[in-house]
Image 1 (tube, rainbow, N blue to C red):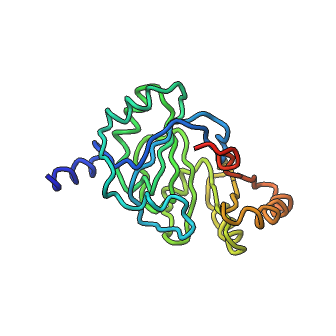
Image 2 (image 1 turned 120 degrees about the vertical axis):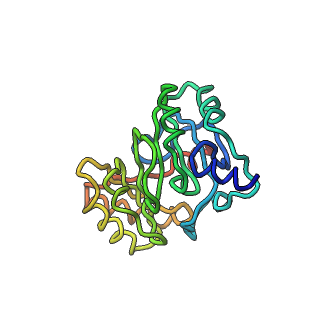
Length: 210
């Protein structure tokens, strides 16, 4: 039974889901927009400041079919469906994204770029992490570069990727939540000196939106 389940997941026909919920996108270019989130379980990147560490493992979470996931998303009026994690690109997301688009939904993904991009996407949010080097194919597909700022070295990290994402890519710096009180003022000054960048503030946390 376990072998059969692994094959289904490998093909993207069923996926381990930590949670799925209707909310407001709190970050980046689509901040403030209604969106249905599908948070897949499983991550091999392991950011120490991750605020959803419970998403790293797959054990104990339901494995849902593409049809089930699309049916749940279709119950809500928003067009945007955000696939996040964990690291969603651990899985083949071709079947899920095709089915969502066939149901009239926009497919958005939030990925570290640690795995090859699979699926058909209307928006790719690329958020590189130092723990696992991002792949060039994901960098080239980025619509949005979102760098979480935890310490001063992250500005150099951000500048490095600014040079290689497409010219049309939107650029965001986001304070790591636990340090937002101290680091936000620093980011403001950086953006004033480097106006190609914008600030992403995790609006949902300020507003206590799940």
